[in-house]
Length: 124
Image (cartoon, rainbow, N blue to C red; front, side, top):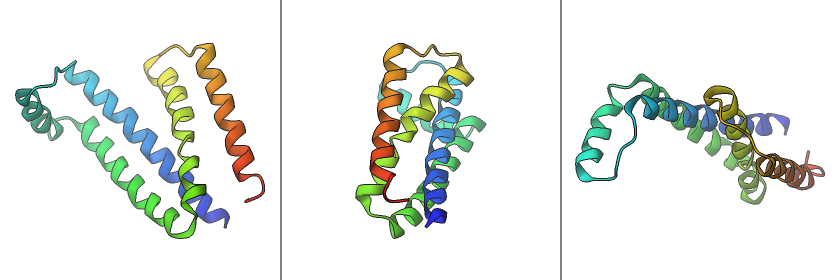
């Protein structure tokens, strides 16, 4: 049973890595206003920006791991575990992008971790 939780954790980590890489890629492209012209530009830029390409790869791999996890776990157990993505994204944003973490984010992280502990304590 521990193997499936590791697969679930792998799916979560791959999604976070993918998101961080997508943000790195978009930082290179710069801010875009939503328009048809920019949609075409963004689609063409995907194939020219290594960060976006690798980020999409990680997202795809995350999906594969997620499907394996769903094949063995109840959705009511697996889906709440994805809230760890919020925790990891805040920490990764602080580490990679030097974004500040405020008191409310810390409290949110604590609440997520308490909630996951309550959810998984008897399951593991």
